[in-house]
Image (cartoon, rainbow over all chains, first blue to last red; front, side, top):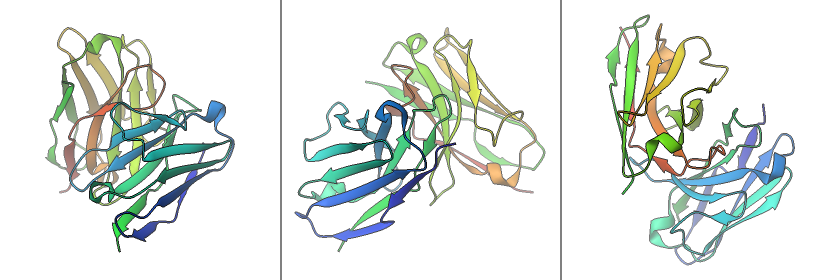
Length: 109
Length: 119
């Protein structure tokens, strides 16, 4: 099983600042099959990125996914108030066995 | 628009069984792989089970293999999760999620159905 480790656990930032979220895999993720989700309190997760760097439909371009192999990054350039949430990475390189990272909370400083 | 609506959760005694349902609308359900993902409130996400678009292939997380059964009825646009011999550690919010390309990422999610296992 591929274990995904997200860091930091919490990121305290102000609106307008940039955010860099990391997702490390215990072994190389096949074909960079990695997705990112955003989850707000009381709501279901929402798909942001897939294939490490492809934005899902309707996702603004301030969200950028990058990385390969075992190291992946989600970058948010210029945090908007609605971006404060918990972010999860998920690998599907070993599909159908799928795993999630533990999450990074982006909170208002 | 795409809607996934889970139901069937509640408070259940340990050792009992439960069936969750997920009613789909707004897309061609029979063409999509579907998944169940669970989340203990305040904690992270855990993939639980998946089924191919036609229901012929089914996959489970090791942690639930043998006790959970995923199924679907494409004529009713509904996904199911049958959980037997419930344990306290099965207490979670259960989401159904669609997988448009059968690739393993989830393009749409329901709002979840809460299962609490308690005597």
